[in-house]
Image 1 (cartoon, rainbow, N blue to C red):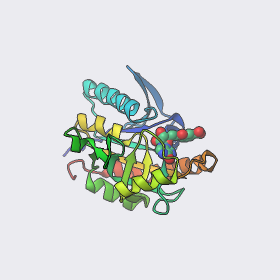
Image 2: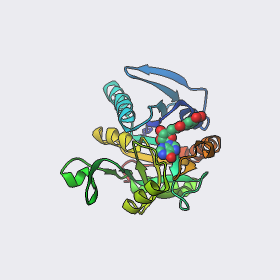
Image 3: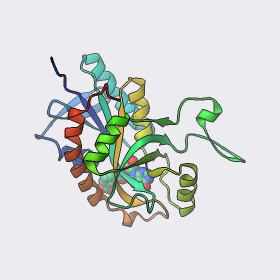
Image 4: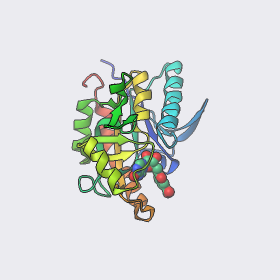
Length: 240
Ligand SMILES: O=C(O)c1cccc(C(=O)CC[C@H]2O[C@@H](n3cnc4c(=O)[nH]cnc43)[C@H](O)[C@@H]2O)c1
């Protein structure tokens, strides 16, 4: 019997998040330049990509990397969206890890007099992607991450009222970030499963940039990937 390694594409927003993941992986890594994106290759299995801030740029960057790998005949078996996030208090405190069992676009739709309508209710597309259940289960067990909905927004929440409105619309939401849904859309277009795991750097509510604990969140991300890589390497993609 032959076993084939799963190649994993890890997408962060910014280089500082990418480097936090790289610190958990073996070797110095090397840069691989592709049309439109540059990858940090760590070992045989991991390509790390600082894909940019926001769902559109993240989707475009991840799509470029997925297409290049497919054309090379060495496609990825999994895409991981990761980085820091804002957490809904008290469910996801600063310093905690959150893992998405649903990756949901929180503001993709239409505002109406009766409230927000997701694009699906307008007859278009999708607003939620679901990572493989077995991978979510195994990742939560290995990392201790809180599991729930992780929202993707284009505008960072900056008031208590907006945080409350989002939680009212998405009662299982633990956190928000700005790339997961874009990464998941790109992965889905290529038929590749997706995972989203994040470290909470700030509480969601009134904007207070000084309260962001970015260093602690990046350290938590490194620790999480140290525990996550054995799971990714033993996970069977056919066991959804
Ligand atoms: O300034 C730095 O040193 C630094 C280091 C690492 C990351 C950053 C970012 O600003 C990352 C932006 C990225 O983080 C996500 N994020 C974090 N908190 C929130 C939030 O409350 N609401 C939405 N997104 C959040 C998001 O994915 C951004 O792309 C800076």
